Length: 354
Image (cartoon, rainbow, N blue to C red; front, side, top):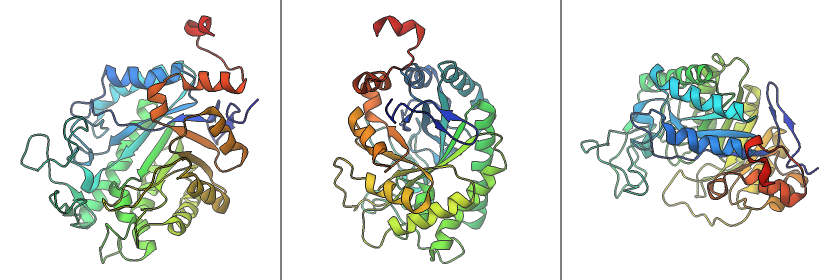
């Protein structure tokens, strides 16, 4: 059997294969509430054989949403529909995960098929954004965020903790903290978006403090869940966040009990210089895995079974996370298994299509 379709045992859960659905925003919620779109969208991947499914960036507070259509988990009433989603995923022998997020200065944006740019605070579906510093993502277009006070920071850490408590109640077995793609936690990490002079800015230790305090708070709410963190390993910009700092961060996260590091790149600044080609993010994941011995997930333009298997054979990552290719084919693992000559279990209702 291929490595791709071998199991991977974590501390409290076991992935039946190495294919995990990467979080993908759907911009289809109202007031943060999930609906049948999310149930069907996420459920189809479970039916198709994915080992785990990480739900889209789910905001820990209303102002933490990327758009007004984002999912949220800032109030107890949002739990009920999420329970329905996790129950269905588990019934299909897959593992439900959730990505907890705050968009920071990249919040208050339009839906991508309508207007992906920032919406002004006084306009419909717009609000005042917050960030570590009053630096706009697109200075020529965006209204500058309000620099967070120490009380704001403390509240946001509590928001992540309470969101984790609700996620556990809702039935998620993987909790992923979103510290990538230029959203709030990444904004604290990168010196290009953080010019604070207090204990949350300046040195690397200070810039990592916000994420580390979130991790420590979140740990209080976990029972048997696996804790993952997604990072951008580089800003693709001069004097920004880079691989060396990412390795240091990953080592710190390992000490704090993070079980999987999910390695992506970019998103911090509009002037990034990035050329997304095959394996453009893989070297970052491979180096972090080698230097930290953390279980490492890689993501980005992985479309073929042979490519995914090669990454695992070369020991450059432990988990393959895929987004767009799952949208094109929700039953991607069934196709990949057939391509590699592996025999995996199909859901009974679809078995006659083998």
